Length: 86
Image (cartoon, rainbow, N blue to C red; front, side):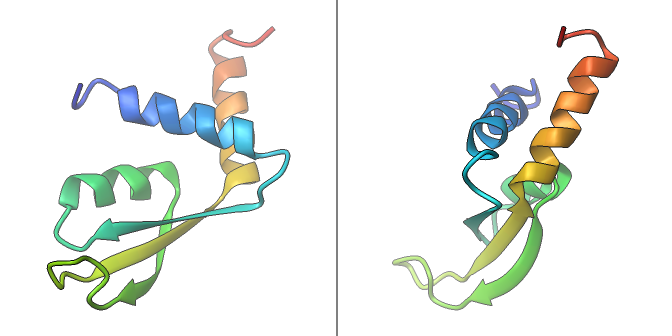
């Protein structure tokens, strides 16, 4: 499942479903989880804070946020450009 675009596709669907009701999405990511950080940054999420001791083992987390409506609009534009949307 890694490096096949599954997570990216799922997140695009989530953003599109959330967009009518939610302006901003926020999530926490372990500071040591480089793959997740790369994924979310690539999707348009920005680190907005560091939460020390967030996880039960004491590890910190990055709090990340993204403008859901902007991400959904960008995804719809990409789909239209490749003919996936009528």
